Each structure stands twice: as C-alpha cells, then as structure tokens.
Length: 396
Picture 1: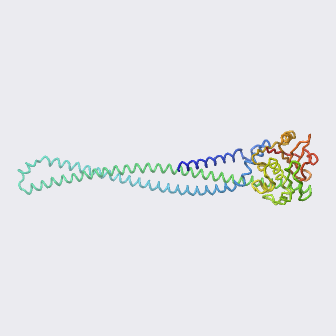
Picture 2: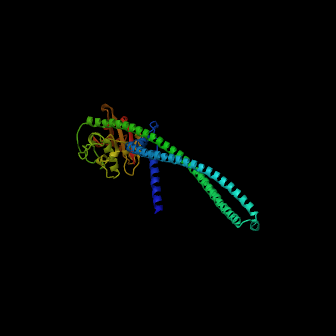
C-alpha cells in the first residue's frame, strides 16, 4: 500500500514538473526578441494565454506563502523559546555540577579522614582492649565506638558513590543539553533562511502578478483594437445574417449564418456576424479534416478568447500542428497545392478593417478562397490584393 502511495506521489510531482516545463518553454520576458511569426505564435501560446489564469493562481500562491510564513514565524518563536529554556537548563546544570563537585570533594576528604581514624583504631588489638581496660564499661564503649566508626565510614562511602554517580549523570545531561542547544541554534538559522526565501518568493510572485496583469491588460487593449478592425470590415461590407451553403468542397462556414451570427464572442459585446471571421475560418479548416466543428463550438470555449478576440493559440485543430508561415505567396501555394488549406490574415486600410479568409485551392497565380463574410469559392484577386496579407497560418 505504501509503495502504491509513493508511486502516486512521484507521478503527481513528475506531472507538475512537466507542466512547469511546458509553461516556461520559452523566455516570457517582455524584451524577448520575436524574430518571426512562429516566435510570435509561441510567445502568445506559452506566455500570454496562461496570463489570465496565472493571475488567479499566483494570487493563491501568495496566500499559501503567507500561511507558510505565518507558520515559519511561529516555528521560529517556538525554537527561540526552546533555546532560551535549554540555555537556562544548561546554566542550572552547571550550578548543580559545581555544587556536586564541591560536595563530592568534601565527602571524599571526610571519608579519607575517617579511614585514617579507622586505621589507627585497628592498631589497637582486641587482646589489648581486654587486658588493658580498667573497666568493662570502657571496653564496651570502645567496641561501640569502633562499630559506629565503621558504620559511618560505610555511609560516607555510599554518599561518595551516590555523589559521584549524580555528578556524572548531571555532567552527561549537560553535554546532551549542549548538543541539543547547538541543534536548536542550527535549526533556528535554517528556519530564518527558509522564511527569508519564502519572503523573497512572495516578492517575486507579487511582481509576476503585477507584470502578468499589465501584460494581460495590454493584450486586452490589443484584442479590442483587432475586434474593432473586424467589425469595421463587416460594417463596411454591409449586409446582415445570411446563408451561402457549404461551398463546392462541403466545408464552408459563414460568420453571418443565423445559427450563430448573433452569438456574442466571449469577453466582448461583438457578435460572430460582425467579428467572427477568425472563428469561422478556423472552423472551416477543422471541418476540412473531418472534425465535427462549427463556429459555435469555438465560441462556446471562452479559453480561446481574450477580450472577444480569437487569439493565436486557438488557431488549431485537434491532432494537428499550427505553423505561421509569413506572407510568401509561393509558400502559401505550396501548402494549398498539397491539400492543406491556409488561413490568410489581411488588412483593409480604407476602412481600418481586419479580416480572415481561407485559401483552399490555387488558380494559376491566384487562389480560390472561402470568405467567411462574402461567401465561398471566390477568387482572391476579385476582392483583395496580396499586399493586404499580414500573415498566413497553416494547420496541418
């Protein structure tokens, strides 16, 4: 049973460490150079997406550290009290040992004197006592004296042994208390270091919370600008809710479909019809791979959005990889000719608009696109120019 528990704990710790590696796979410093679109995608995927949730989790970490610091302070106080108590015990033991040392010295000297007296008494034989005593009472007194002296010597000997044993016991106890004091002092030092580390960690996490909040707020501002760009494009294009069918290849979606056109993008007040071109484009690509995805499926997952805008980490399909391939027309053509639809992000400067479309087939130097707003199977150059393209995303 214990082995099973240990294995489970080891697995939890391993997964936790693995998760940390995935979160911090790249440097999330604000000054990190982003050399290409893939760097940008990685940065947003690994650094920006977790910001909203990390603000909450980091705050919880601070609360946890506060509790740990409170506990550490309490432990330090207990250790300091124990040190003070142990120091007093050592001081008392020292006084006892000094007293026992003096007592042992006194009793030992007294015993030696008594032994000398006994020796002198032994020099007078019983024969001499019998024939030199004038009176019987004197004899008896001398015999009694000798017996008493012998008994007293035995008592003194026992006292010396007890005093010596007590002395050794107290000295040993003082040595143990001295070792305990050293251990407590080392423990106190470790506790203070641990508390300092916790305080430093709290400071670092507080800074992370603040920086995360700032970065998240900046992304929300950027998201709102991009969302406004989508809305500007749709407003300039005109029209309302409408259906166009599923297109020649059967996987076209329009953001204007009545099924989801009025749905509100999470974190915003914008509808799919006005600002859902990215949502519809991703849904089309996923459906092209046979996945049961619609724009509504993506909208229902609020984790895909910041401030209503579909962010880079959401440009993905289950079991597929995402590649940001820049603005090379030749590279887009190579993907499309290989059967991989490519999402194109473009700007409409005249209306300060932004828009996404899906190129799914090449036509000479042109592309056949599914436009989430204008309809399926349209020629790219009938609506746009390649200079409007800011990036392309291949999900394959």
